[in-house]
Structures are given as C-alpha cells and as structure tokens.
Length: 96
Image (cartoon, rainbow, N blue to C red; front, side, top):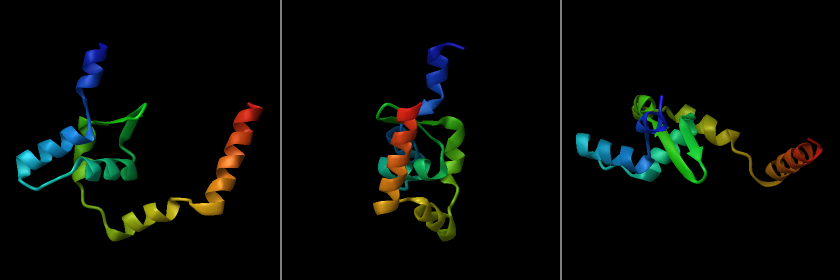
C-alpha cells in the first residue's frame, strides 16, 4: 500500500461538509463536522490538520442523543482539576 492509497481514504472536515451539503442540500459547516468527529473519537490529527477516514462518515451522520452529548461535556476538565492533571502529566513525562 503506497502513501497515496493511504491518504485517498482521508478527508478534511471542510471536504466532508461540502459533500454533505451538495448531496443533501442541508447546510453543513466544517466546524460542525470537526466538533462531532472529535466528540465521537473518529478524528485523526496530523500536526494541526484534522483528517477523517471515509469509513467513519456514517458514524458522523448518526444522530446523537442529548444524553450522549451531555456525557461528553461532563468528561471535559476545566479549572483547578485540569491544571492538576496537566502538572501530573508533566512530572510523569519528566521522569521518563
């Protein structure tokens, strides 16, 4: 499998949004695609660029329940808890 074959199966959120808009007529933004791909765990990041596999597009189109969205938000850490977790990770990395 060459590098070109590997990259043919990956699309940017902008490309996916454009395809969804063209095929369904529903206005879809790249930001919406990016957020959902990140939330459901199908996003692949290379540097600052996000890529999504063509096989994962059906998962992006699946409707989420309010409960699923709430669960994701509850896992996001902010404030003092996030800072403490970051400090622990830095100490662990420094020891390694």
